[in-house]
Amino acid sequence: MGPDKRRLWNPVVETLSRDAMRALQLERLQRQVAYNASRSPYYRERMHWAGIAPQDVRSFEDFAQLPVMDKDEHRRVQQRSIDEYGSPLALIGCAPREAIVRINATSGTTGVPTLYTLTARDVAVVNEMHARKYWRAGIRPGHVMLQALSLSMFTGGLPLSQGIMHLGACVVPVGIEGGLRRVVEFAQLTRPDALVATPSFATQLVEQGALGAPASTLGLRWFFSAGEPGGSEPGTRRLIGEGLAARVYDHTGGGHAFHCISCEAADDGAGMHFVSEDHCLLELVDPATRAPIPLAESAVGEMVFTFLDWEGGPLMRYALGDILEYHERPCSCGLPGPRLRIVGRADDMLIVKGVNVYPKAIQQVLLEFAPRVTGAMRVLLDAPGPAVRPPLRLRVEHGSGLAGGELDELEAALRQRLRELLRITPRIEWVAPGSLPRDAHKTRLVEISR
Image: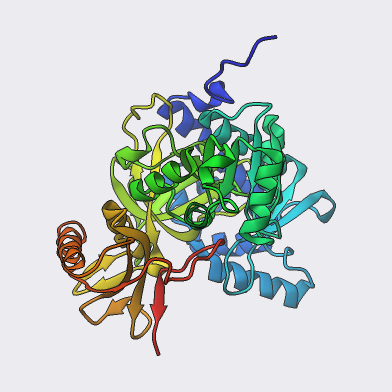
């Protein structure tokens, strides 16, 4: 038997027309809403408060009348469930205890973790989504993938390992807990074709090298960015791609139903292909009012998603705080499906003289100037946002060998570019390369000085 020439893992579903996909989503949504209401006391309460019964959901517009849930609300429900029932899953969980085979948690670094509960069928759905993503990028059985992400409760741990194995590729789950040296040692030992890590970790690997050798000597063909934004930014992609001598893909989705991956046309700025529409209903809302924003070309809003055809803990109208830009025009790569660009975090948004600014957007502009900058930066605040007393202050690492007049010229060009694209004129403090701490997990771009 020859090699599998399919460009898509599941072409029957992944090539559905927009009308056919929306019809499938609505059918599954109506069934999911009835399932959630019949099995979850919490969802019954929310629907009662909204004055909506499952049979009232005849359209996506009807469904949008239900309130949005976020992580703070999720944590409150978990605690209430523990207090009243002795279990964090009693109120929101929908499958019986004996059907739950895995519990994952979010990767957040603050607050009580929020839990994702899965049945064996839910695990199969997640595996399918991982396979769809990596297959699009060219991963096939026989390829070796080094997984350098946290392997604890994080949804990018075991679920990702299982998804890679489901595709038929080989996973090396080295994790990140042992640091850069351990990852490099396993890369040299196992000779992987692909690395899955945060862009912060990949940048660190490029800067520090592979135990005395350039990172490009590891022989990687693919780098998959996960765990934090950055993999879709042209500057970051260029830095990592050149440093590793590998193709760079941004992607998202761990142990839940929301999955995306970029493509060969990633530098056109339209983001990642949304590959899990049949199991995840996407909505956009205004981050302040939560009013619905129609899904149309270039629409921007806070992401709200609902799990479809899900058994364990199906999240419904759930907001993670990500601000997305939506694109439905055909992609030049030829692959199907809408695309999503992560603009920033709703809770990271800053307001400077009435202008909404996201730290990641600042970094994206900054990376246009590489290698005259390293890409490392911090936004310096006197007090927590979102309101910022102008001027906005930035601490930025310049590239090697720059000083004096060269820095003055760079600063003028950078300030002009930020003024053109983001309508801000920040004050810039230059620091030497390597001055700002790197984090292999997630790098915070905002610092508050007391």
